[in-house]
Structures are given as C-alpha cells and as structure tokens.
Length: 465
Image (tube, rainbow, N blue to C red; front, top):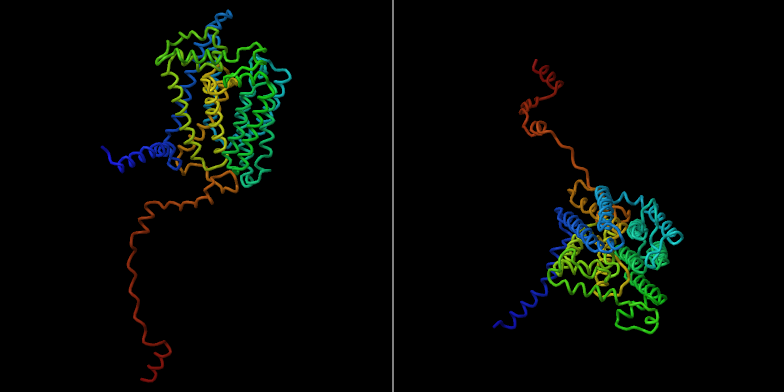
C-alpha cells in the first residue's frame, strides 16, 4: 500500500503531465524541422479526401431521385477541391507579406459582392447567400472570412504602437467587420455571421489589444448575436427546441425544429464502433435534411462509426496543434494576426458544426470545413491553409536566409529584433592567410651608434694634429 507522500507525488505528477505534454507539443521557442508544415499539409489533404468521399456517399441518393447522376455533387466538389489545391500551392510559395497589397482591393471587392448578393442574389432554403457568375454559383460570404482576416491583419499591423488606445484599436476594424457581418445577416445567415464575428474577435486578440477592450468587443458580439436571435421567430424556435421546450408560437408555425437533430443523433447512434459501411447509410434517404451539407458529420458517423468520427477529430486536432506551433513562432505582428485568425476561423467553425450535429449547440447552419459540400467554402479554406503553409515554409529556412527584421515600432519586422545584424567580415583567401601568418625574414641588426657627430670627429682630429 502506497504511503500518503507517494500518493501526493503521483497525483502531482499526473496533474503536471498534461501541461508538460502541451509544452512539448507547442515548443514556441524551438527551431522548426518542417514537422508542422507536413502535419498541416497531410491533415488538410486527408480531410479534403474524406470530404469528397462523404459528399459522394451522402448526395448520391438525392441525385438519383432528382434524375441526375449519383456522381454529380462529388465531381463538382472534386473540381472545386482541385481549384482550391492550386490556390493553396500558389499561396504557400509566396511571401505572406506580399499579400498586404491585396488587403484593400480584397475588402472592397468583398463588400461590393455582398451588396450584389442582396440585390440580385439567389435565395436557397431561406438564406440569400449565392450569386451566379459566369455559370458558377459563388458564395462571397465564405471568401469574406479570409479577406477580412487579411485586411484586419494589415490595418492592425500598421497601428502596432497605437493599439493600447480604444479608438485606434477598434476603428476602422470593428466598423468594417460589423458592417460585413450586417450584410451577411441581411441574407438571414446567422451561422456565417457568427463566424465572421469570431474572425473579428480573434484578430483583436492576436493583435494584443488591452484586455478591457477585448472583453468589451466580446460582450458586444454576444449582445448582437442575442439580438439577432430574439428578432427571428425561426431562430428562437430552434433555441427553444435545443433547451427542450416548445412554445405555442413554434407549434403554430407547423415546423418540427428538432427533426434534423433527432435524425442526426439517430444516425450517429446506429453507426456503432465501425459503422454500417461506406455508402450504406439509411438516414441519408431524406431523413436528414441537407445530409451532404451541414449534417454530413452525422452521415459520416453512421457509415464509418465511432472510428470515423474520432479519425476526423484527430485530424482537426493535428491541424490545430501544427497551426498553433507555426503561429506561436511568429515574431512579427502581421503574420501572427493573420495565422491566428485563420486558425480560430477554421477550428472554431468545425467545433460549431460538430456541436450543432451532436445537439450540444442549436442548429445555425454552419458547414464542416473541408468535408461539407460547397465549392466556395472548400476553396476559401484551402487558400487559408496555403497562407499558413507559407508561414511554415519560412520557418523552415535557415536563420541567415530569412528576411532581416525591423524593430517593433516599425511594425514590419520581428518584434524582438532591435537592429539589423552586423555585416560579416570579408573572407580572406587561404593562401593570403597563410602568407600573412608565415613569419618574415629576420631584420638585419642595427649598426652600433657612432661615438660622436661629424663636427666632433673633425675637432678631435684637428686637436690631435
């Protein structure tokens, strides 16, 4: 039987183990060996492949019922995945600081497209988010997440020395961010609006604004989300159903607001440990609305079982740890804000979707990154990963090959750097070095000093004569 002292030491060791493991994983001060780069790339490719496979499985039944090929949605998803992979490769090969030039044109184009969506856009399932351009359906709100993160990182980087003042920390970042969120909620898409607000809060957090300003902006986001929910009977009915209540006005509406969640949970429960088999889902036969979009995680759990859901969770966990390691090593403000905001956006959206499918959160219509059907969402997520891969590639370079930094006051160089490193002395050729080191000929001995000067010599000679 262990003594009380041994039990205390064992308990303390058990409590310190998670912290030690996290420090070992993060290692913000250690030099990168390229592990983070390949972990991000591998996890992204694996999630994209799983997504295309699950879109094929979840959409085939409805495609056949609509008189289309069962491969229609999957081929479309694969095409957009190819476009996104090309964008990811291009962005991973350029310097992230070059993207500052696209900040203002990108945010301007985003605002114009969001306004056009509300004017001439197409409404699907009650949300007006899509616009048809050159025969393709585009969802500008998905690209707004990445472009808003880029614009906010650029602005906050220029105001690095002024972020302790609430006026400079929140203006113009907060008005533009809330304006874009307002344009999205104008189309009745609460889920995407909350993700955009998450992007705004994450950018302010990684910019290092004072805590009171960060808390104030967070409370403002919460109040805004509550106001948007209260003003919509449909959203309130979803929230009431989530907490297990059903008011009379929800019954009068005639909609079963718990139908989607109940069938999603039934699909997850029937999957068991290993699932019913790929393509063998029964809930996708019109039992789960939008089975290949927002609730694709339920179909995945039914067909691949607990093993498949844990695999997806593990891939997102690997992606989270690897991106965090890249962001934690950034000493410049601009890449730290951009990379941290992308991490909060993708992982936060994934957490919201999984919580929504499992009944932990109310249904608000948020797709699962890389896996849910949707070309705009897939391309924007892959391009965002390309930005993070660019930061990881820069971290893999030798220190002498990296871009020399500036001071923190200049806002564009490493925060810890004070001045440029001193220039190295010019190399001396080996032959010249050996010649300089070889001892020269011994100098001739000096002549003994004369006994007197010339005048004294003549005087002495004359006197002797």
